[in-house]
Image (cartoon, rainbow, N blue to C red; front, side, top):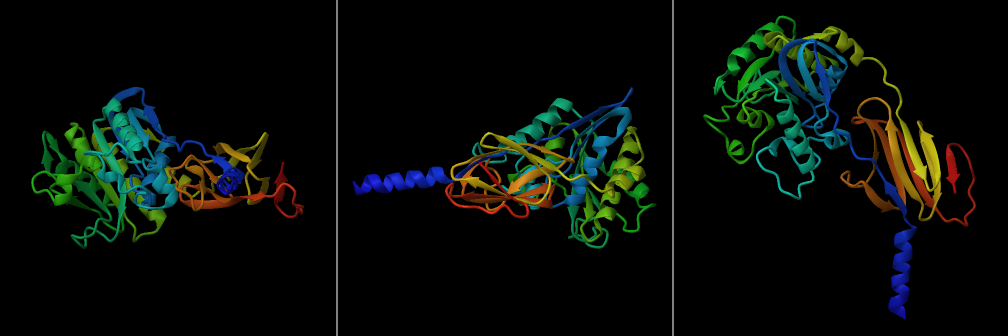
Length: 352
């Protein structure tokens, strides 16, 4: 009898929790094709989620018009890490292009990146990053650099291209950039033998691949400017034509973004939330986030919960509504006893 009672209490406790369901985290890809034939260039931002200028610069390109050539942009390759503002939420995504375990939580994302690249078949792949310091001043620093895996690989003269971009960009930059050669194939480090990063994986697929890094020691707008100038000169080198200019894109970066709106369904009631709010719900309620509407990079992030989860049960949850890593407002969902008396004050609202 005692076992039955304990089991009943456990089941009651389990089902009393709020059942929460979140939407799939997006994997956005933007394709632009000009009227004139030209090079095919692929831009990847956000492989590392705490390298803000990389994914912000890539995102700005999603609004351009291509006049000559083709451009494909993956602005937020590792969106989970971006929301968490970490290098990699499930480990370093940039170390998983050689092999990845079947149960790795990044597997679906890595396969999506690979298949997008292989289906597009670009002439050039450019991965956007950020590093500390200035590579021009220290061999140990990665900031403000163009990273190549070798001076030459197969028929690709990577150093020639990198030097062209370096020399062109440095005419317009206060903080100069330099070229870093990692000698991935000719003199590999241990890490290069164990893993493939995106650029050396790209080279193995017969795609000219580069990484560009701005320095985290600069202000964010200066970092974005550095990325855009490097990209502009890569485009010039290969003959890709776009509009507006990179200077105009940089001006857009400073514009104020709209506040996201979260569309939720609580039991049978649909509501839209676009400001700080506390929602009081009865025990065992079903809370489903139907949609996140707002600027690119908008999403809803539950605190204290594994961000890989799409569905879970919790008693009280605070959701941070973010644009990328920046919190805009918070929605709190609190479970209350259906027989309790509640006072509707401020932003509190009881939903039956």
